Image (cartoon, rainbow, N blue to C red):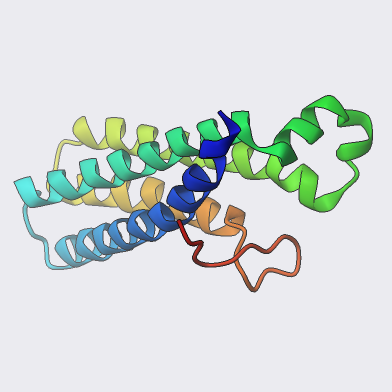
Length: 157
C-alpha cells in the first residue's frame, strides 16, 4: 500500500495549485460582484461550490497521505520526541490542524451565505469566511521558500 504514497504525494502537491487558482479566482469574482452591486448568479454559486469541492478533495488526499506518510507515522509513534522536531511536528500536527480549520471556515461561510437576505450580504459573508480560510491555508502550505518547512512546488509522478 505504501507504493501508492509517492503518487498521492505528487497528486496532493499538484492539486494544491488547482485549489489555489479556483480559490483566488472566486474571491476576486466575489469582490468584483460586491463592489459593483451585482446579483449572486449561478456562476457565483458554481465558484463557491468549486472552491469547496477542490478544497475537500485536497483534504481527502491529505487524509490519505497522513495515513501513508512515514513522517506522520513517525510523529504518531514517537510523539513525545517528534513534537519537538519542527518539520515532523509541522506535518504531524500543524499542517493538518490548520487545514481542518480552513475547511471549517469554508463550510461556515458557505452555510451562512445561503441564509443571507441580500446579494451584497452573501458576497460579504463569502469574502470574509473564504478569505480567512485562504489566509489560513496559505500560511500552512509547505512552500518551497519557507524557512520553517519547505517542500518542492511541483513533484513528479
